[in-house]
Amino acid sequence: MAEENTEKSEALDLSGLGSFDFTPAWAKGRPDDKTKFARFEEREDRGDRRASNERRSFGERKSFGDRKPAGERKGFGERRPFGDRKGTGENRGAGERRFGDRGPRRDDRPSREFVKPLDVDVRILPSQKELGPIIRQLQTKHTAYALKQLAYLFLENPQACMLRVSSKKDAAEPILFHQCKACGFVALSADELSAHVLAEHIGDYYDTETIDCEPPKGSFNCVAKCGVTGVLLGPPNLHGYDARVREVLRERCPGMPEGAYRARIEMVRDPETVEQWRASATKKTVFKRKGEEAAIEREAAEMEFRRTILPGLMTTAKSVDFTAEVALKSPCRALVFACRDALNKEKRFPASLFYALRGAFHHRKLEFFRANDPRGPEFVVAQKFQPLDVEHAIPELGALVKYVSEHPCTTQAQLVAALSAGDAAKAEECKKTLAWLIEKGHLVGYFNGVLAIPADHPKYHPPKKVEGSKAAKAEEVAPAAEPAPAVEAEAVPVAEPAPAAEPAPAVEAEAAPAAEPAPTDA
Picture 1 (tube, rainbow, N blue to C red):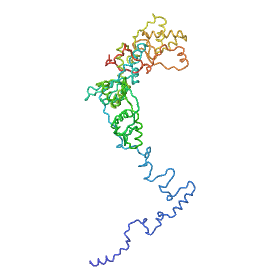
Picture 2: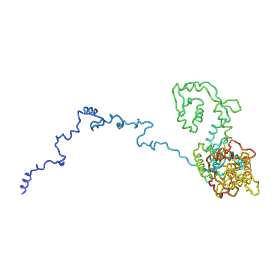
Picture 3: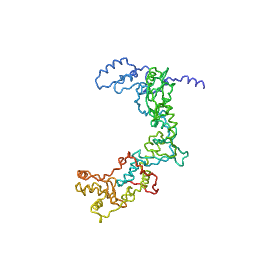
Picture 4: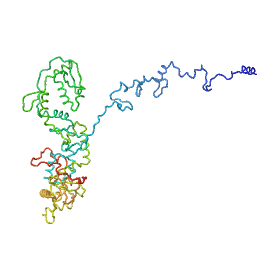
């Protein structure tokens, strides 16, 4: 039985199965069939075809195989090879940027120095020098000024606005301020203040003079050059080299740390540069104490200044007063940030200046009132109001008061033009009478020329601007008797010093009570 099975298996024919190629019928082909791949073979006549394509008519499109390689293309919109593109690697220009290039990486950017906020209280006060002229103007003009506008007048003038900076009571480490008595400069360290005094005020006590001298003798192999300004400083082994470095740093690069400046000094070994420095070193500057004839060099003058003059110009305190102009120019960034924040807050709502001005005016016995209603804008005036009895008054006085009563918030120019009727003599008499009524308190004269009848809350609103020939003609015929000054910088004569017999009051002589309502806009 086994033999029969063996014979049958030997007789089995497998030729009908073919090869073990499972490729689909549509993909099968003869190995020698090269017609399907003929289009991928290298064409020998590529150059001829390219020449023929160049002679074709305008607008025809080249075939795929006739295009030039990427590196040989020219004309608008050409593409360069990947490694030879402009603006990448070493070929990138200073102003060229790739698509998506947003500048240096975050790791390459210079880190900003953190400025720790100061634990200080900053109070805004009016300058005593500028407060005196305003008080005198209130007393002589007899006009009413808005307190809030006077506060903004000080804020707009950095020289008239004082800042009182003091360390907070609950501060962990109380801050000591070092101040210059000559200009009010404030620093947080004694070394910083001494450097400021030496640089800014040595000229107040010494005169400088440039004299001729012999060029330095000796052999010098190199000369130092300032890397910031390009000034030749001299050989490092020369006497006075350190003084020359500090002088250039102080005059040419103020505010730059000495260590950073010295790190940028270059050493030049060119003989021509050395000779150029030698030729420029034929002059030097000497110092003479004012009133004396002896000349000394800068090092000796600085040592004498530090020993005899500098201690008297420096003071240390826990609270300092200085102008806003000095505060914003301080090299201490933390102090500048604290003062700037306080000024910005005060400009939004001048509460500190408002109450400081109120206390100063109250000390000089000036009067206060609110216009329109109990919560209206607050004004200050020199005299008390005394309503005039029109029925028993002189007709000329009664006519003026009656006109203001019938025309609320009229201006002085409108009143004079209406009552004078073009008569120049009558207009002059009317202006004098109006000035007397305002001085005695029978009428309220605001700073912008508006008139009102005395009351608990006199009427007030800014005058309307009237355009036209009639208004211009009225102002030309009858100008205002005393044009009220606007609350601008011109209203404060800064250059006029306050008289010694009548000093300006201390700002904190009588502070306003805490329950005083906040100022409101007009």
